[in-house]
Image (cartoon, rainbow, N blue to C red; front, side, top):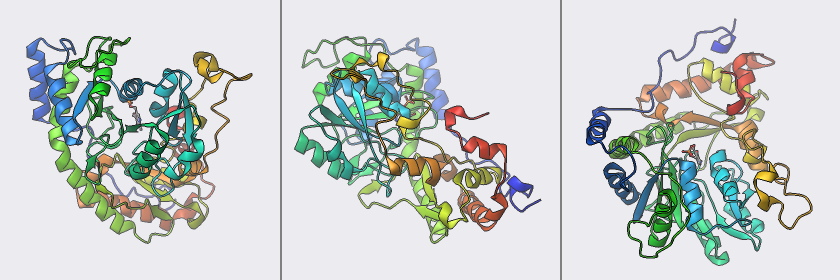
Length: 432
Ligand SMILES: Cc1ncc(COP(=O)(O)O)c(C=O)c1O
């Protein structure tokens, strides 16, 4: 029997962290309002709650226009439609992200071009973008991943130089600010997800924000079965779909948006304390702070685990040991999308992959992004944002557990445990 919980010792933390999502009387009242209104859906368009939320959400992110949609994936799809992505166009995406960033590109029969991430931020590496631009490139789709921003200064500069559009995937960045500009307001459009793990959530849901009325009109028509947009100044008539958000979900979002600034402050304070506790810990690295991030929007706190400084014990064992100490966290949280089991691209479904070629492009084998692979398979450790909504003691428990595991890391050598086996698998492939 060892000292670590995974080898039979006492777990360091026996009480749960803050539960997520948080529902309070404001959500209940808003839901009651919808229930008794007999207006549950997104028609007549837009619903009262969806319209109010979209307006406030856009303002909160310093954008002029906002539109609720039914998922974050659809938010990206609608944004791609708005900027006029056509079959065969190329869209630059980071390799290290959730598959939902990339799926919509394929759905438009366009071609995702994976570019590696910056090891300082784990976000799209702006220094590598120009090498990936071809005559077919139409857009850059950076993701503000985890707790950092992609370098929007550089991305906007490159986009202007090459006449490319920019869609910000802000699924992790609710309330985030870059030099005082809201996440999603700097590119042509910003796309958000309200899936249950996100910083504000309605279980499922999404939103698109933009400063461009023509784009907003296209988004509204696209997600409302092709009907004319609310303003219809540009008279676009396009095939659209029912991708509307229902009023129950919009009502819940309204209540959560009000709470977000206060929660952002608590998270930021707790995260600073966490960083102070981890400074100088051998085996652990932090992502580089960026003073251009003027409000932190951390979907997860992400640290780096260096097995070379931890007696070569693999990350899977380190993370599993932390989990058994009572600290929910994850290592293989994302994979480079081109390697993920959730990316079984069949070129017959996406004909543009074959256009003008003898053999279709093989998106699974044509990219190599070493930083994304390092983050995914050996380095990154993700802690859910809600761990940082509680007390300083909660944060101390995480830091203490990290230090306990590192101090006893020898106990993990050669250890076989279900939690370790699970950590070697992507999230979609794990045993429950
Ligand atoms: C980075 C990123 N992009 C896109 C999405 C897609 O959002 P959704 O799951 O709401 O479709 C998600 C979330 O799940 C995400 O984390």
